[in-house]
Image (cartoon, rainbow over all chains, first blue to last red; front, side, top):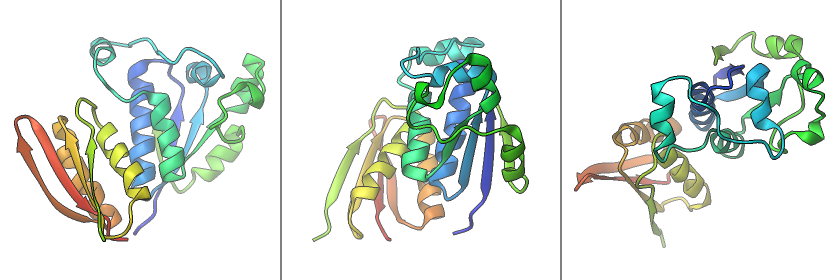
Amino acid sequence: MESNKISIIVVSGAHERLQMAAMVASVGAVSGNEVSVFLSMNAMPYFVKGSDTRAPAEGPFGTLMAGKNVPAFRMLFQQAIELGGAKVHPCSMAMDVMGVESEGLEPFLSEPLGLTKFLRDARDAQVWTF
Amino acid sequence: MPERKVIDARGSFCPGPLMELIGWIKLAEIGDELEVLSTDKGSANDIPEWVKKVGHDFLGAREEAGVWHITVKKAK
């Protein structure tokens, strides 16, 4: 089976974008790709321990999804990790700005990464930004 | 003795049914058959693609009263 690298940058806090990022991560990871996710900016608060998992809709599709049995984006990220070996990294800059340590983030996240390391790892990968 | 497992993923949207199948396929033995029930048409197209890509056996998909029955055999 061929193996490809997929690097996903998530900066939005909108439901639609978090959902699509989680879908690409989970389906990508279970299909034999090496998936690495980099969380920063408005996406970060959803990965703080005990935070609200409901993200606001950006447009009408987000509102439509809210009433349907769509898999939760955090669960999809976890499935990407557990079933497909994906890694989901918090951005170290975002952690500094928020004043949060690794212990304050969801335990399924991998170690914090800086942009330099993430970009080096993403050199030969498909890069998706949400 | 190969077993047959029915996975009820009705009401869940893409990629929920696929993820449920993968979770169960990891627990299954080689030769076991898994039948996914899904009301999501996208999953009926997507699951066979995944099965082909990772190398399991796709045994068929049929629709009955708005429910897709997608059958897969664990091959490795």
